Image 1: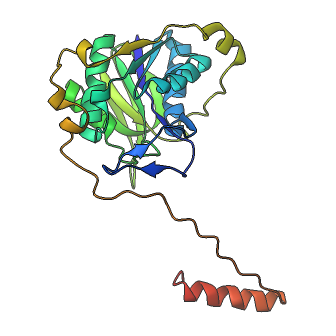
Image 2: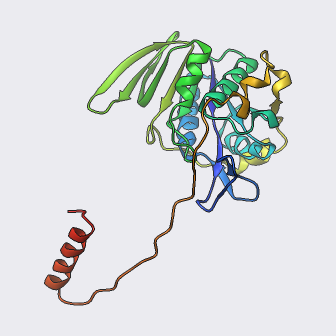
Image 3: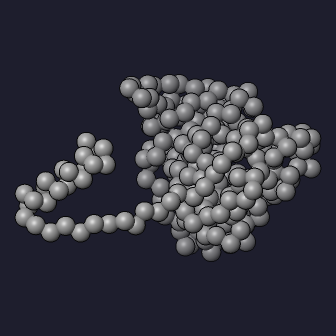
Length: 261
């Protein structure tokens, strides 16, 4: 069984700048693996431990995105693929999903594709399902629990707004997993030494079956960001003194003033 996990390098800080097109300027800032992707990697590794599956990771980004693949190697992942090309830059959700689907089809035919719930720099939670649509495979989102991995299917529990639903989905398929499905393991220093020279496979547009650059990056993005900005920090504070009753009344008055109650 072959499992592919989609991961992404995201800013490790909220102190980021935005260019005139609404894209994050990622150069020169601290980065990390998207926290939700850690749960996807751990889910794949748990399945690997029980079934002997091969686990690969794939990401799209600049060459420095190799760092998150190295981190995945330290967790126990077998192979890593990096989709990197300037023509992929500026992609919206649709173009990103298409690029990843093209990349996964170049790596082989995984039975199971696992994505995190969403990314912390986009928060759309749409990439996984859109990838599945492009690849013509079934998908399930909001997976809270893996109940059973069978020979030709996987049984999962979905966390819906008001119910928990059990679904059996046939391979090949894609799932997106919720935060907390498993506790992600820490990277291993031993594996870091063992995999420091491990080959990472790079793919660019010329490696894809579809080489039409109108389908990728900003050219393949039907949506454009109208406005994006970092969150404003509020450092205002008040210091109160008094008895417990007086402080309780002040707190009540303040909450009412702010229309929280």
